[in-house]
Length: 352
Ligand SMILES: Cc1cc2nc3c(=O)[nH]c(=O)nc-3n(C[C@H](O)[C@H](O)[C@H](O)COP(=O)(O)O)c2cc1C
Image (cartoon, rainbow, N blue to C red; front, side, top):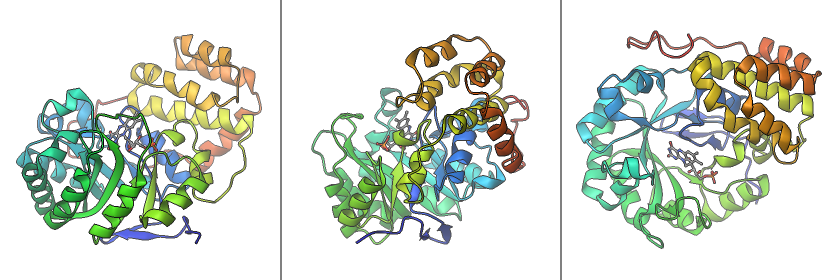
């Protein structure tokens, strides 16, 4: 049976308008990415993982992750850490910043994170993991969700033991990326585990991993009973994938649309991160937008060599002049939204 991905669902009291969730991705999920995702049909977007220690120490860059635009809702902010009290305090800050959901990261396999006892390591410490969820759920009024991997070692099924305990501790939804931490991104996401988890818990489960097309989303939802799919890598530089996965439109974008979306992304990211940080941050996006056989490889490489974003804009518009018209329409329709005013020392963060 076909699932209507354009139908709404709920996490606690939070209504989510579609069944496509944009994945949290470190170094990718900036505000511009999330706003674009919402525009293309993601019902829920998520910040990249935010360090609770960074929030505790009022680290300026970390606090910048709490900048939320008014047109991003519903939005989850994801936090990571290993100390229940610090996580609870971070969750309070996330709630004050205007997030609709606080998501907890029990999936990050990267050493820098796991060696501090956070991320995927917590899959093997169920007492601490449940204590974190409980402390966070007690600290905030918004629903608390958890994103996890199947376990640490290959073949592990830890998520099936831990999942129900996290729900008991207060998790209102679970997202499962059914790869082990050891696997990183190799092999395949085994969504038969997602189906097993759905059977074990009474809260919505979101399926993450290898959702790259509408057909794949339909098959994972039908066979797992998950409430929604999460899309990560397929949406990098390719918001049209979100539209296709949602079953809304499989029209290929024109060259003008691609370049206009990239230019809007460049401008918004420069505003958000400041010109200097944005210049290096954006390099990987040129390949993502212009790849997939859409533009010659040499052109992508040329863009990454340019020293300023102004030069990047000029070069893109010289290649596809018609993009200027599409861009001005996009900018009119999607002017930067107001941000929630924060009582936090982030006034000089980013480009203003
Ligand atoms: C560059 C990158 C950064 C990621 N950062 C995060 C993160 O901050 N928090 C998280 O829970 N998952 C993170 N993930 C995992 C994704 O959210 C997702 O679960 C995973 O990529 C599988 O989905 P996909 O096949 O659709 O990409 C990241 C993945 C990538 C590729």
